[in-house]
Every structure is written in structure tokens, then in C-alpha cells.
Image (cartoon, rainbow, N blue to C red; front, side):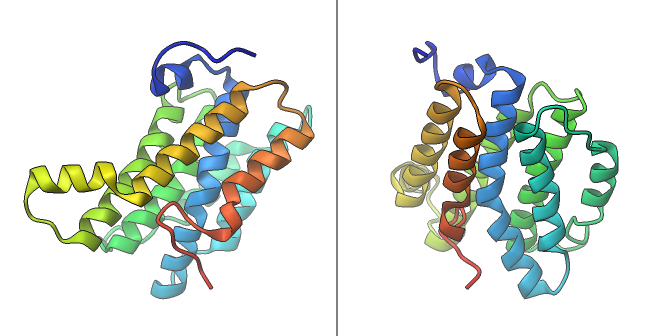
Length: 197
């Protein structure tokens, strides 16, 4: 399959629904460790439940005709959100993971044509926020340059490019989906370069 013309977001929009879902699932895999770290630190949330819902999305992608009640999963997911009064950095990153999975559930229920862009942007904005916090740069111009050139941002862009290329190419059969899930899991390292252990 030849690569579609246009920029990154245009290419995302050109994907069919199944390929968009696979892209979002891979990105969500890389956000889950941020949720797990927050849950571990703040002693709230349930990383296993979040992983379970994400696993059902992969099952929907892999098993033809899988019958999964995604309305019920959306209800379960709502219970996993960080407390509304917690505005900490960790809570915001955990919420990004929940929102990414929520966007997939919306897409599965046919309610979210822009979901794939939302998940891509959420992952990028988490990296941007992490760089802002860790670098402590006050000057807006220098900060913008720092974010653009930062190794974590380069890694995030490379990762999203790799996932997009993977979903654009060939058939999304069981093996391709397994490889995509492995890519998303990134050996347990999140988009912020963090790991639970």
C-alpha cells in the first residue's frame, strides 16, 4: 500500500475506522503506565481495570464478530477517572490515558469521527506538559524551541509515525495487530519515558 499524500493529521483522517482504532489502541497502550504510576502514587484508580477495557478493544480488532458491550465498558471506564478535585500533574496524565480509551469506546459506538486526532494530540500534549514541568523554562520562545527539540518529543513523533505507518501498510491481521500492540506497550515505558518499576 502506498503512503497517502498529505500531512500526518490528513493521513490519520484517511484511515478507515478499523485502522484508526488500531492506531488509537497502540497509543493508549503507551499511556497506560502513566495511569498506573498515578494510581500507585495516589492510591486511587485501578490500572488492571483500565488494561482490561483496552484488552477488549484489541479483542474487537482481532476477533471477527466479537460481541462486546462497549456502553457497559464506558460506564466502567468513567469510574476509573482520577478524582475531579485532583489537579496534580500525575492526575492530568492519568486522565489522558482514560480519555484516550474513552475516545476509542466512542469511536466503537460510532460517536467520534475526530477521536483519532484527539488521542494523537493527548499523547503529544502530555509530553509537552512533562517537558514544561521538567525544564522549568520561563521564556515562551525558548520553551517552544526546547519542546520542539527535546528527545522525548522527538521520540513521541517517531513513535506516532511508526504506528501510523504500521496501520497504513497491508492487512491488519492477527499477527500485525500483535506486533502493533507490542509496539504500543513499548516494553512498559510510557510516552513520558516513565515506567512503573
